[in-house]
Image (tube, rainbow, N blue to C red; front, side, top):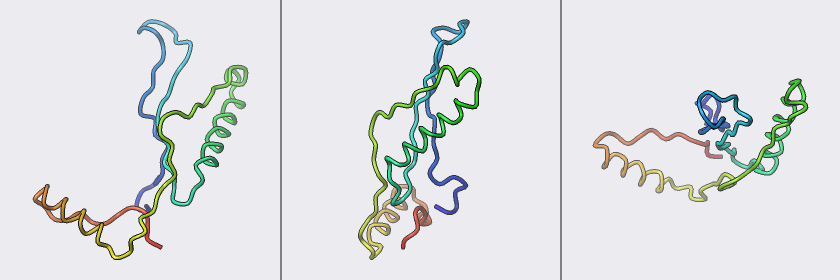
Amino acid sequence: MDEYPIAYPLLVGRMTCGDWASSVPDRLVAEGRIGVALDEDPGALRAAVEEAVADAARSNPWLHHHPPTVRWTGGQFASGRYAGDDGSLGQTVARAHADITGGPPPRERGALRE
């Protein structure tokens, strides 16, 4: 994942606030996902995100007295590894991609093999 500036991002995919266009919203809900690196503990990652949100709230006069909450909903999974090392799965997927697109097989990318 070295080619990506942020390989495992925190992504906010949906935000909602306010009841209608001309109101001052009383709350904001941001929903998203966070990438889990290989061998990273998802619980420790969640704790780090919660601490970062709490730190930001403590440094803001309004949020200090109205702290945000973080809830973890939906699927929560650790990263995974493929145990095979002969390259056959990658070759099969690359050939399938080339067959479907009519183009060359894509270059391999993702987490580095160890």
